[in-house]
Length: 216
Image (cartoon, rainbow, N blue to C red; front, side, top):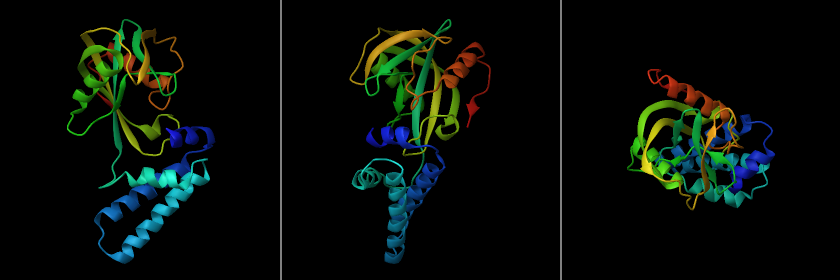
């Protein structure tokens, strides 16, 4: 979370971050496929530019950013985050993140080998203690287009409508609270994970299950 927190504190605009994300992806793809030593050096230089941009606009050390980027390999694609929205009348299920003390829809990164619906059911259970089933994929959003704070990597967010089938409210190593809140009076949200407009849109979808899935 060190780079994420610094981006939120120090970024006054996101265009430079979008450029850095694209440069990192170009470098990652090039280093994955090229065998030409000359091209390898060129792609390493592109990666250095992305790292320099990240560190210039944050307080993070270059070594930290380089190690973060070194964990990425293979063809660069957006990361995929799945969130589950459970509504009871006009209230929505939220969990309080241990990382920042703020509230969000339960969810997280989809693991390799999981389908999106499997991932969101797992995340709802792990973070809230409730068992759930998926009703509908309500929205597939590009994280960069919905007012989230800056983040080091590009990501897509999948929002599912779910209904509870069992379980009981239970915190986890990732969460310190589980509760239902009126959609008209939401607590302070963890904006890196969900923004108010998304919850309100999901509530509208819950009232109109025949609506098509939102995208982008």
